[in-house]
Image 1 (cartoon, rainbow, N blue to C red):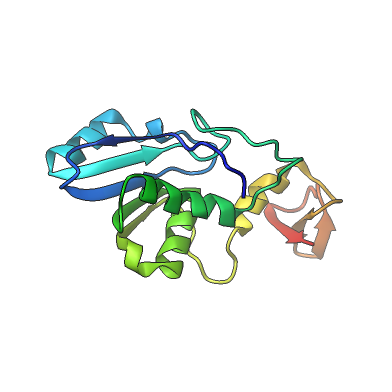
Image 2 (tube, one colour; image 1 turned 180 degrees about the vertical axis):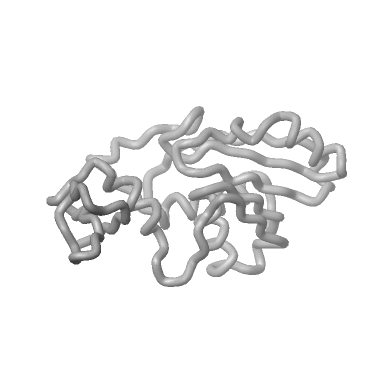
Length: 171
């Protein structure tokens, strides 16, 4: 795993109940508004928000030279928690952050006091398909992600003028 710097900031007292705000992919932690963090802090909560690797003020990785996975990004959640001295926290997650929060809750439930997931997909066998569907919008038909669209006549290479449902198969 790459040794990448993860930017984070904290509001509130260290003795207050911790809330870790996990934003979606390609979204900076500051998209959790200051006013929101302030209201949580005013309710005797310790609030931490951070930027994912390759996002905002966190460090970058040469993905072609050192590719990383969702597992690495999930492990960054633990790193942020550890860096702030948190054995556990309330996780509030948006979009792809919701997938990360669910991964953490399933893998290490003792680290999750509660889980709030906003605008995300549930785990259940198709993890990452929504994310891959977004990544496949470029229409790639070669490489590790092969993109196709589903139509009433079956699978077709992208683009297909008769379809609006996406699927990606990962090799």
